[in-house]
Length: 434
Ligand SMILES: [Zn+2]
Image 1: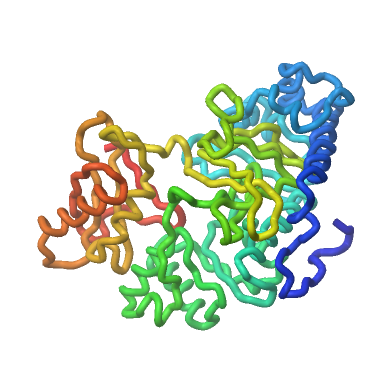
Image 2: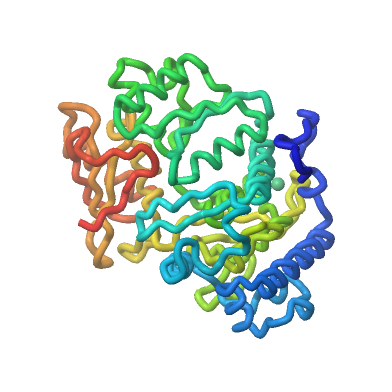
């Protein structure tokens, strides 16, 4: 990164990769680079010191960075989960004992949403933002998107840093980014709808809250697709072959993305060591599900063996696209995996199944799943009906059949009034306890 330069050099739009040197690097050369970057990481953790990680390294018998060879040494280091970061921030306020820099070199902060406890604090230096922006640029380029296009998003901002991170990544790449507010109310959703009808972004909106915008457009008498230009495919959660894309904004937001030629997301391995681990912290064989664990490299504020408690599967076979990195498939948050009637499935499987039933998914699908308690009972699902006067028992049957086919579980569907389930401007709560 050259100082004083805010934006990347222009590329030939016809070239295949954003960063050909990094993305097609000889795997052995990349491993050497990773080894050097792990040595540097360990040296900084011990020399500064960074008490939280120095302790973990000591527990692995690492007390001298000169003895570290590289990636292979990480296997002995205990993993870190989010609760430990939260605890560290509580016992050593405000930012805990796991940071590698002082606050005065950080230029941005954000917090987690706090839905699972007290929000944790994310900090970025200029360099760490640059790593994210370069990683995101590889992602956009892989999608066939190019600087000069216009794009749009509706991520939340302010203390939740995700919106600004995405907006910054878009601007860095050279998109005209049309950032509309998350559709918390119908009135706010209409602001976004009107902006899209004026500006007609080249890459239409198709993210988490697309259903909310479809719903409000319909209320306004507009066709969500022909008039507003929304993407026709709704945003589903993780599927069986979803590519890994994010390692969390607290760790590595743009860790990987799909090349669209082979399954999985290409992992930016020059900036991360990725592992799929069993519950004892040992690597599972390639191709098997393990817990997504990342060590970020060449960062001002890295994390060492951070276990995101999400399912990941690694593929090491070479890819036809020419990129030479490992690829990763994402299976969702492990805590979100549900078990009933001898099957394991995700809320996203229920969502995909219900999307095939037009009477409950046009113009948008609103539903909640009640967390299954025993193993044998029917899965309780509440679904908003969208059409007045439809035959409820036949419609219920179609929803239950779609769930049986799509997720392999027997469900008991309750049809509820349109508008009776809570709405969200971002990620909806789809799993309830009763
Ligand atoms: Zn590929």
